[in-house]
Amino acid sequence: MKRIGVLTSGGDGPGLNPCIRAVTRTAVSHGLEVLGIKRGYTGLIDNDVMPLDARTVGGILSRGGTILGTARSAEFRTPQGQREALRNLNRNSLDGLVVIGGNGSLTGASVLYEQGFPVVGVPATIDNDVGGTDIAIGVDTALNTILDAIDKIKDTASSHQRAFLIEVMGRDSGYLALMGGVAGGAELILVPEVETPLETVAQILVNAYIRGKAHCIVVIAEGYKPGTRAVVAYLEEHKEELGFEVRVTVLGHVQRGGAPSAFDRLLATRLGAAAVMELKEGRAGNVVGLVGNEIKITPLAEVLAKPKYFDMSLYELSKLMEK
Ligand code: F6P
Image 1 (tube, rainbow, N blue to C red):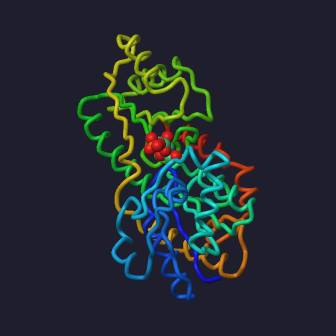
Image 2: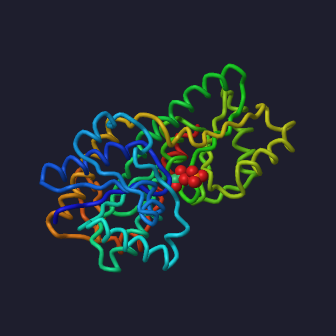
């Protein structure tokens, strides 16, 4: 093994740069050359690459985003796209590849591995819906961004005696809403994994008002059905009965940026280094994750077959706190 590639793919998040840095510096320390592939699988198909060394990755530990850029590549899902990607991996004389990203990116990694190329995956997505790890890179920083927003919104909500709907990311996953809601002291958490009728949402607002609360904070995952707009429309229709006035804040992509937290920098450094050591020692087709406080290696196929489960016990705990 002489030369490895590294790419970041899918939705970005804080901690990608520390991971690129760890991959590069670990590889260099073990006598390997490193090629950065820009814009995820799109850049791999276009052969858009940049050499990385210990100095190129200097000063990026504290930076959000990814110096390599990222993309969601539709072309890589086609047989032609995959053929071009494999051709470029060989053209650049790469002996292995580290893929940093979420479930979509790891599905791409598994396609390359099934076609005989040595790949190791590193879970990075603020959604925290990747198996094989307790927590993915980016989650901790995103949660802290959410908490900062909830705390600030609570201040203004209390001053005005208002209810606030705060929408957080998570197309299919209620993880950020659940964790953010519990840690931020929300009166109600709405997630895709648990059905909560609109009448119940309205009733919780009314009950909070009757109990004399100064505010009512509802944290909504982007993927909650029937969606934030439907909640707003329903509450608007019933505004005479609510007590609270209602306002909405959609946090959006602010959750994906910013300097990575201490936890994310450490996680990214540990996982990036572990991914290189897997390749170096001749093992591939796996995901490196953090389970307990140990680095754990899980086959890509297993990670992709078993998506993460929603923590129902924490959801039940949140219900006890919504008083
Ligand atoms: O998968 C991460 C994520 O941030 C989701 O929570 C969100 O639904 C999605 O990406 C948004 O993607 P994009 O930035 O491509 O609009």
